[in-house]
Image (cartoon, rainbow, N blue to C red; front, side, top):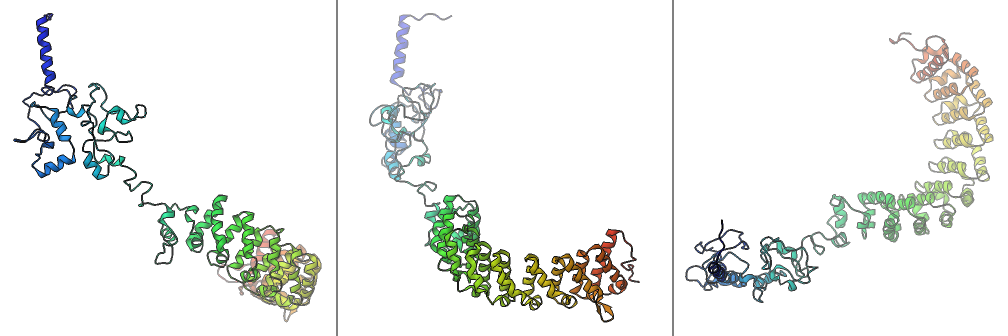
Amino acid sequence: MFRQMGPQQQQQQQQQQHQQQQQPNANLHSNSFYGNSTMSNNSQSSSLFSPGPGQPGSTSLGFGSSNPLGAAIGSAFGGFGSSVGNSAGSSGSRRDSLSASCDLYKRSSSSLAAIGQPYYNSLGFSSSPSPIGMPLPSQTSGHSLTPPPSLSSHGSSSSLHLGGLTSGSGRYISAAPGAEAKYRSAANTSSFFSSNSQLFPPSRQRYNRADIMPSGRSRLLEDFRNNRFPNLQLRDLMGHIVEFSQDQHGSRFIQQKLERASPAERQLVFNEILQAAYQLMVDVIGNYVIQKFFEFGSLEQKLALAERIRGHVLSLALQMYGCRVIQKALEFIPPDQQVINEMVRELDGHVLKCVKDQNGNHVVQKCIECVQPQSLQFIIDAFKSQVFALSTHPYGCRVIQRILEHCLPEQTLPILEELHQHTEQLVQDQYGNYVIQHVLEHGRPEDKSKIVAEIRGNVLVLSQHKFASNVVEKCVTHASRTERAMLIDEVCTMNDGPHSALYTMMKDQYANYVVQKMIDVAEPAQRKIVMHKIRPHIATLRKYTYGKHILAKLEKYYMKNGMDLGPMCGPSNGII
């Protein structure tokens, strides 16, 4: 059991406590920097803060003032060593141990000054590092050693008297000098990854028109071609749109982006290409970007580009790449727009020149396809007395066919009248035969009958002709039932020397196709007559390459109808 202490004992105990307060470092208590352990006065002093033999106690970091290195370090780190040294007083305790009563935390102007401030200010830091984690004098050992995250609710750092623990902005500063770099002054320092860093500048700063590589391309285009800019967007090309449009890879990139771009992005691109519209229209690569705007641009953008075409329609129509731009404009601008009629009228007086040109003929064809027929009368007038010449022309024959397809009956009538005057020559011409075939496919019944009448009596001869055979085949297909029967009877009843005309046609490299077509389109009764005419010549037909086509056609019909008129093909060993 414990006895109650008397007055004398209590007085002795108070005297002992008073002596301990007079010697704060005699024993390190729980608020020591090193924890709860207690060290005696006999403990060996640290070499970091303890003065060596013969050195005064005020020396910083254990270096004497007579030592140049010690003087320099002592000056650089301010009073750090002195403060720590003075905290021990004249006692013999460890001077690297910091207690709550040490001079470092005494609220005087000298102890609250930033530690090592002269040195760190020379490095460009806004504040010097301070030892973090040491309890303040008002804290107990049970309190957290980490300062609060913000001083916004406590006022400025000066009101809290934290000294070197905070920067001028009230932010807590790490004790590690390396970590101090995070809190440098933005006006005096720069980071590789900061907004003002020049290591990775934005594209507009990094790329400009003056950056020309040895290849002649800009640095931006060169990087793009070498896959150094994988996430490039249309907005990154500002100032380089025209250059990219004239590059094979850049043009393809812009075309793909324009298909899915927003109206604002398209407008950004459009603003640049409009200034160089004609240059791009005649460019081997750039014309595709202009075409893309006619496909996906707004009506205002299409009309603005059409204004750039005006005055240059003829030159563009005769140019290899410009003709494609005009065709796109005619196709995607509404035909009721006045600019379309104005563009087309620029060809007046130059129609035949364009029709006979390898590029211009496509423009004239597109005009006939897309423009209102009433606006094309000048083209019809230009063809007067030129129909035969144009029908036998490699490009003109195409234009004639477009007129027959799209123009008004009163416009096609004079064209057809001239064609009928030259049917015999046209059916045998390498280009004219296509015009006659077109009339048989799309013409009026009376026009078809006129052509069939020209063919009758010449079926055998024309069927053996390389070009005319195509016309005979079309006649058999598109003629009336009566006209078709007359054409088939002509070859079945007519003799060609010792053999019938049908036999001669079956062996011919061109006429055999006419016979096959007759078998396909003939009436059942007439088809049976044709087959019986062919059967006596089966053995002979096997010897001819083109005759085998006829045998294959007959075999198909025999098998389909269940007929058996004898073996149509010889045995596999070739013996008849």
